[in-house]
Image (cartoon, rainbow, N blue to C red; front, side, top):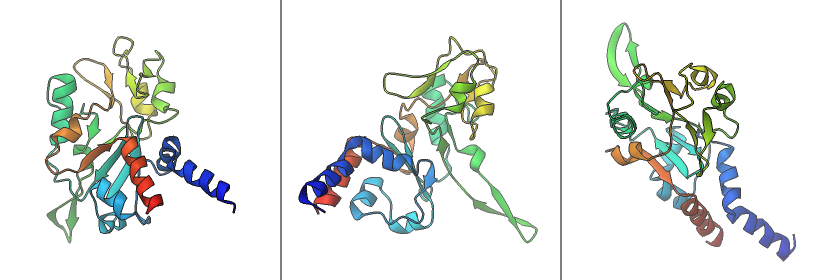
Length: 216
């Protein structure tokens, strides 16, 4: 391979959009089975062991890379509290744009219950072609100037088509307002997590970390 071709390959790898596309391929999936560089592990705030155990998941979003480390989640539901207080002015796990309570599972063992909880914060995948938006009869789900898909509450009629269409049932109809809501990437969940289980990493930081790997 010529020096020019090597440079083009290197430039492509370091390109911001290329980095995003790489993460889009595994968006919403655990990183299990992947060997992550020390630079990236440090950026993600996790260990290779946690990656191998399948507790680290990433989502490629318009504003940055969302990293969820299930090993750090303590199940306090502070992410849901902060989300609904910030966006709705009230507390409610059901209407939270990040879903954690619904992923709490108590497993019985030999007929006796034990507190073997599985914690996992889950949220909107910000799909390139969102099923929720395509299903909405009012075209109330659109991409804002950041590229984040949000709900136009003035147009929303609370029919629930978005909830039913989403493979992960992320959009939720508030039983009080009869309006749908979904993640708008405000960062309230990240800011309120006392355990550091959630991060939104700017794409420039991800690209910078990738550049360090290539230049090393």
